[in-house]
Length: 332
Image (cartoon, rainbow, N blue to C red):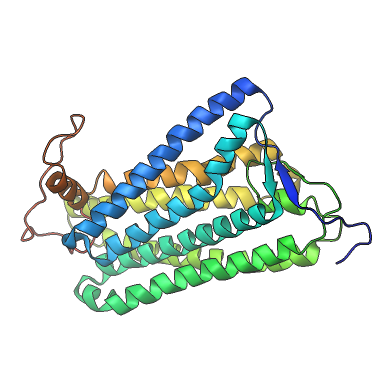
């Protein structure tokens, strides 16, 4: 795949969204508010779960790692973007681009696997409640987490090696606000089909298997819900799935739209706008989706914050003797 005309690059230039100082200032404000929200939301969720023994269950174990992953891949991209908005300089070193690419890809893949693990957790809680403590034991949870991170690392390693082993012939302007794979591959001065085939195969194996695991889990969940005789019981059980369904719809929907499209439909500006969803919006709204309607998290916050914050009422948790779903599952 070598080329006699290839040039050894030491840096790339991220073109970002615009060269207009006024628009860059607006983007800086929007990205800054979003990043602070990401740090506060995910950081608070990590702290609350860590400090409260009642939240040391499989569900909250996955939520804790989901927050950690969101913090990692948002922090790999947003600080550099903020600096570019302020200075107008999108220069990033070759090594810096490689690290950003690797961390972002690894954490994004890990989140994909974590969402599948959480779907399996919900399946067991609703469809096999009597077996929950066995099926979601500490050993099983540790294995699911290890597989999630290992899959993320492996996919990231493959994509990073295949992308940055390509020769770049002097062109170093990346038409994006971070080191995105499609924008980087366009700069290569050689045939990229074999590299892209390997990258696509790796991503498909992990992404498709995670998506099918999630889809299959919810098919069983919906089937179990339909068999519940009372309307109130069906509604209560389904309500425990709405948060996760919202999260996976945004996540998988964005990735499918971003990477599973006919090539003629690709647009650089459109790609940048969609990328904002999974670099800013998803890590920002995940803590809200999983926490604001969760009674156990609200109770934990109420215990840590004895006063009402900004008029937000934090209700007490119902008695553990209250009939309903397994308490290891989502109390929403």
